[in-house]
Length: 219
Length: 256
Image 1 (cartoon, rainbow over the protein chains, first blue to last red):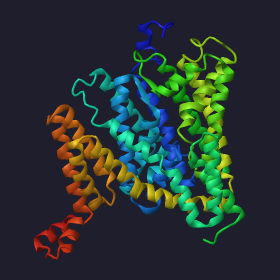
Image 2: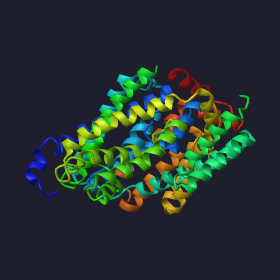
Image 3: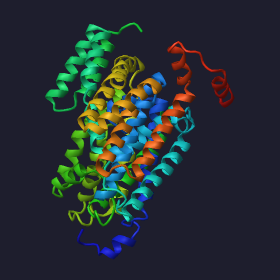
Image 4: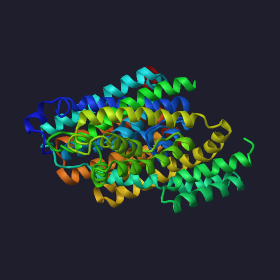
């Protein structure tokens, strides 16, 4: 932050406040369209396996309340934080909030159009992102002088993050209940990822898939 | 279909990469400029000390993990935006110019470099993930879906409930009330628990002011309306072996 005069930081497109909603809009458009990809093809969601599988659970049961609340609380918390500290957290606000929470609200309300179609998905994401960016810039202008409470944002995010950690062991448990070879594969995969210092969720799924292809189970 | 996925992936990757690159470079000028990324991204970008090779290998470690979860569950992991794209963008720029003020701290250059990298990364992850044979994905779904259901229906309500209780008497009180109501009305306690924490902590910090009172009214309204439109009120009256008043049923049938 040395080489640019502060006047330029306020007016130049690449640094100004007014261009911030535009950048958030582009990112949200991409992430929302990523959720469209997941909804239609089952690939390409911009989030952790644990959080995406919450959306999966909603798609299978039709009950989206949990994932909508989860995403919305992250979005809310990160907007407050982003305005206060000057850095918007992309993971909580955009990938979880706009990428999971808002689609879950749409789907819970029975609105599937923006998730079924690519260009409406881009447009929806763009509008939501611009709104999020605009709120942050407005909040910065008034520097949150309305209230200095975080409304328990830290509590919600703590709970959200610790629930994600449960998925790895849960996958091994359900894999074992599907069949013994798939269970063994899942266990070995989880162990391998643990030794490799990676989250065990990915290893547990890959191991289950590998052994499931060698020892298929009847559906 | 593969071509369709590829085209869409290029658009998505370009948009996300462009924005992440610009946002990451803007972080170096925060708080004067509003940045976008994460504190850990900022720290990790700094920790590579302007060395293109360490930026590249840092991103590569997370790339394999992202690839594994894309193939297994269709999820890129958050690392794609937090680590892979910004680090590879920085590495690409620094391979030609070692001055970080002119490369990694410049939103325009980072946006362009990261936009191109985003296109390649997203297209690669999606096209390889979609090439996985369906028989493999059936196993993944058979294992993943019950696990995700357990997570959403049991684990998350319990964790959020305990978090509400541990956050203080007030958020525990409202969390328990709204959590229970949400489980009854909506079938999952998490939305109610989140609202309970919101109100409890809001009142803890600021008392019953205009903001918390408005929030409370909105929450009550939300519950009343969703109970009504899901027919929970009628179901409840019947479950307590009571007769539904005729005028009340009339309101229901006219409003639906």
